[in-house]
Amino acid sequence: KTKPKRVWVLFVADVIQQLVGLRPASKVLVVLHAQHVQHLNPNEKAMIDRWSKDNILYLTPWGMNDDWFWLYAALESSETRRS
Image 1 (cartoon, rainbow, N blue to C red):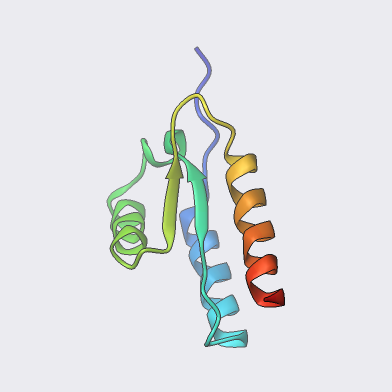
Image 2: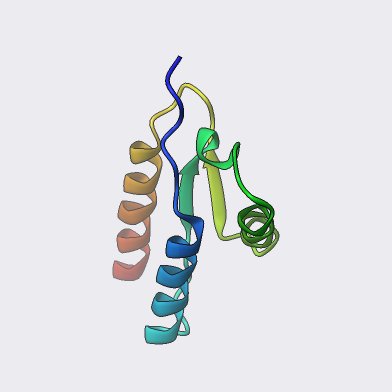
């Protein structure tokens, strides 16, 4: 069995902060596969918990490709803006 790829939670947090700083009224959605939140240190776990509490985190289920989820969210978001 291969070890899951490591997600750099602090890097993602920096990107979120930059996006919110550029467009404060915009909504941020972080889409991660469930495997990426299994082996986190306490600081990373706290950040993931905060994102979950703030409703900006969506964990894709096992057996699903997370790329489909973020692609759908991006397309849905662009449709909403056109309406």
